[in-house]
Length: 84
Ligand SMILES: [Zn+2]
Image 1: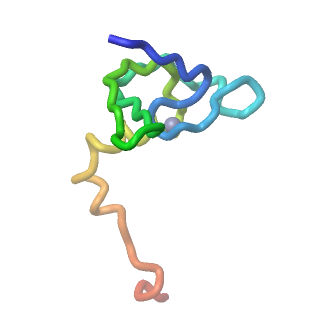
Image 2: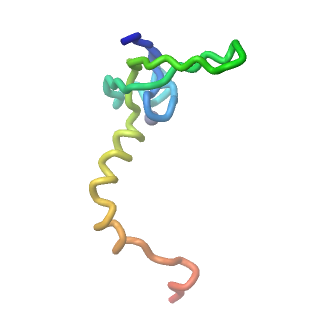
Image 3: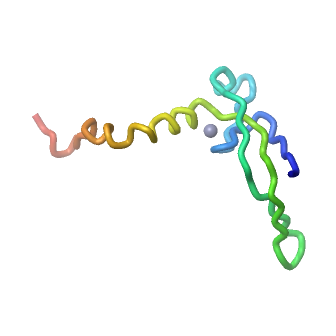
């Protein structure tokens, strides 16, 4: 499969994780499958690719949160009606 190296970009959100962005320290190497679409002709040409890049800290956090979705419900509260 064709490999596409997106450099310092996050494979989940596309944020730049290069040194100096603040996302460099906590990034981890990450790969994902993707579709490269060529739009130069009348029909889109879709090519399956393997994307090599990094995962930023935010997206790592999002993945962790998914496992705790149910338990998080109790933590929600409504500021407008909470009052007192
Ligand atoms: Zn990200």
